[in-house]
Length: 168
Image 1 (cartoon, rainbow, N blue to C red):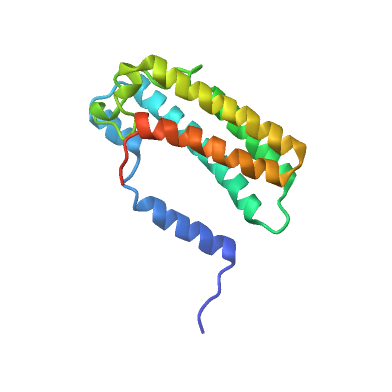
Image 2: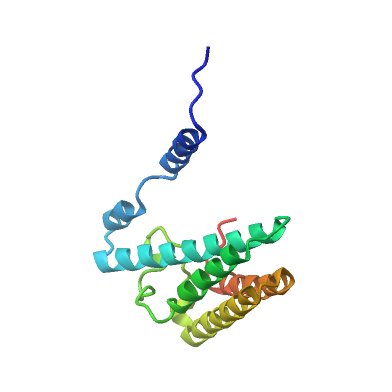
């Protein structure tokens, strides 16, 4: 008779297997590629920030698909997006030399440093769309949040299309 494991253990095991197939610790590869630890740290911080932003956006989209969206969860996720979006240009996460040309495990294109005003404008657009998302979420109206998803998604896509390597 097969042993039945609780769902959390199975989920954790599956996650560990998926992560083990991702190629190891990118920080080790970047150090091996000769990157300065400061660049490696900046890359890791910005990737964590964008991952948090994306995860929060996914929560909002998933909640909007639910029969009864949890507006408190949507609002908390919108707050995370506002916080993370606000860090993009106020941080030291994009030091010159930390793009794909460095050999690091990153998708940041040289366009970020070649067109700094445009990058700043894209980050400002994202911050504004994030604030509007928070206002919509705070209203408690799922329809307002749904309308704002398009604007926020457009701000994300705008930046991805210009400043991020498309691996697909």
